[in-house]
Image 1 (cartoon, rainbow, N blue to C red):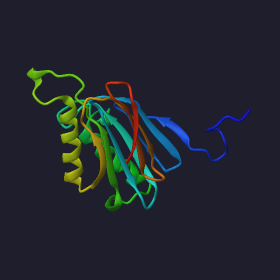
Image 2 (image 1 turned 180 degrees about the vertical axis):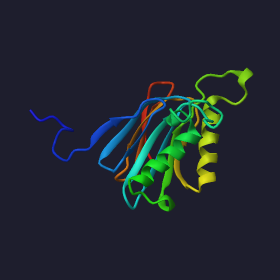
Image 3 (image 1 turned 120 degrees about the vertical axis):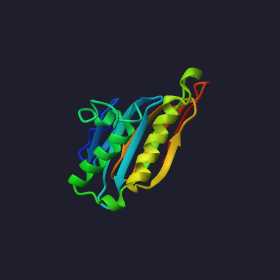
Image 4 (image 1 turned 60 degrees about the vertical axis):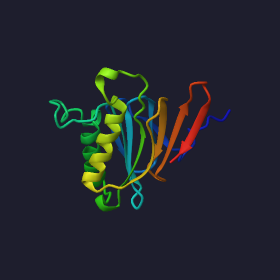
Length: 173
């Protein structure tokens, strides 16, 4: 009996949990499950096929005391940490591109103003712009959860989601 995904040369699947980030030289598939208001940040260098994925939970780590211990928790610090780790592995800062997914506002809390999802999106976009990293594709906002699979070798970000009726959809970014 053949078991798929275990053949020689098959990509390894790496789970990136909430508040985590991972960098790969291209031969892994990086996955994050259960994105609600969280934002998945995929950065990659198409020339070196080095990329990374972060599953960020909150917008602003510069104000947090523990952002140096958990840079993947915050949109701004995750982007900087991913870039730094990618460049350390040989990526070129000037050719890195970004893709974003998530940032849903799944629950309404009028007393909080803009939801966490929107604040996460705004923080990620602002940090990318500040660092000069182009945002080339996104699947953001709305009121649905998402799961993402990122392949640094190709720069492909697959976004899987369900609508309120349970209909499944896949978007390739």
